[in-house]
Image 1 (cartoon, rainbow, N blue to C red):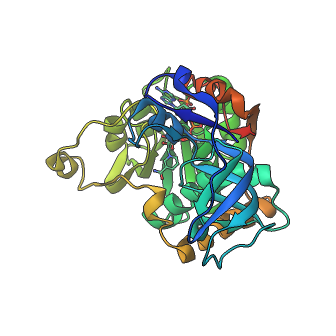
Image 2: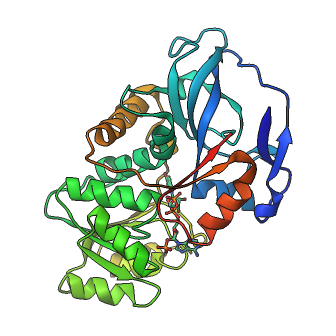
Length: 322
Ligand SMILES: NC(=O)c1ccc[n+]([C@@H]2O[C@H](COP(=O)([O-])OP(=O)(O)OC[C@H]3O[C@@H](n4cnc5c(N)ncnc54)[C@H](OP(=O)(O)O)[C@@H]3O)[C@@H](O)[C@H]2O)c1
């Protein structure tokens, strides 16, 4: 079968489209014939070595497809089931073996491409707004990269929960898409100081929570955008890892909270995973949340997908089709 693997860390050129033997599912595992794999910023962290794995390995943490074979003691799925999963490496492939407990059956209303486009980023938007900092009606939230994959979903979910949403983006076109998703105010943080703009927009009070996936270039100013006892939810490193924060600075800036969550710990068992994934599929099926597939590419062109995502040239989801 064909896969996209890395043998070393580096730029998009280290992605190799290769032939490897078809893997057999072991105890508690299932093999999926991949219909579509989602491209996530996490794949770039894996490629460049910010997140470490044992080389060589197949990239990709999210896919949808059909169960093709199961190993011993699998009770969750059977061959022929349509499923999707997130947070397990190996998705840039024609087939992938995944622990069966991680597989989420797809409801009839959700097609494979939509599932591959939303399961990881949708569950992320769900846990950030429902568990890490449960948003309440009337609160104000700042969402960085508001036209991105997770960003657009966060904007839509925050609006559903009754929050006022301020978004940041890098271009006029992305500003239009963030507004279309429901953002009340949009700041072009490449042209304007977002700290000053948020200060103005909130009459000096600050926002209740910042969802910051940009990291290095935004984290420090994000702390300055919070009301006293506000929450900085730092959940990504698109511009590089955020610098360390002195606990005393959290006191001085208003007894602030800082957390650095990951989906792994918010969908760590089958009950929590199914509850989140079903909520996301319900939003999509009932059109409360719209998924934007910005680009689909053949699996062999994974490097092109990485260039587009890193180059900030996409707004929405990129899918790879084996
Ligand atoms: N912790 C978790 O559980 C979890 C789960 C999923 C995703 N994430 C994180 O969420 C973030 C979004 O992921 P995604 O897959 O949906 O990607 P994305 O938001 O579609 O793409 C990243 C965006 O970050 C912005 N950005 C700002 N500075 C950048 C820079 N120097 N280089 C590249 N992009 C920059 C760009 O938007 P502008 O052009 O508008 O600035 C870009 O479109 C990532 O940081 C990812 O790691 C975290």
